Image (cartoon, rainbow, N blue to C red; front, side, top):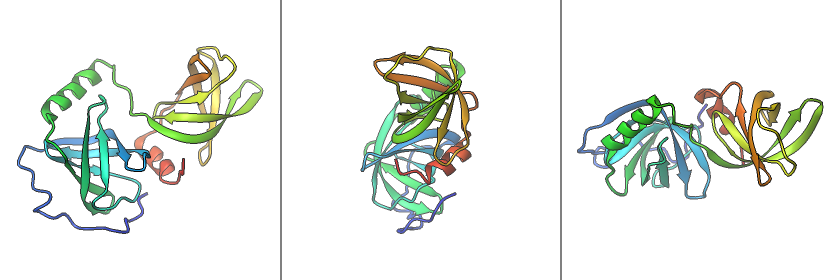
Length: 204
């Protein structure tokens, strides 16, 4: 799934020294924003006030500046201090209140108010409703849904199908339409592994 970075480096104890308690965050999906503006997902493995360890699916390099956004929209800026296989170590620019952030994540998740992180993308897809099909622009996407351009009104709760390059057709439901855009919820959300494999080959 992961292509080795061109600039791998083993963890440096001096660079990855974290004095605070590390909180296990296995399988917690977060968003990373690169210096180029590209957004991708990652899987947090552990996190502390000073940094984190995460699984990635695109090649990244030591020294790269990134911003990590948790599922509650809390974010932290930092730089990659090591790359090993499909994992990276990130050192934050400033310490974060990680315990409070994780407690907020847990509270919101239990309240069923948490949405998967959404990525800004520049992709095209084929939207099918009944016997009609048309190409649409995709502005953002998550494991659970996507936003598309829709100049003509679309009715909420309408069943549809969306076809994305490199993926089989996926059933969806139109959730909303306003000002030339529509939101689609996938009938079957992507699991992280499938989403990561697909995104690793995307250019938009």
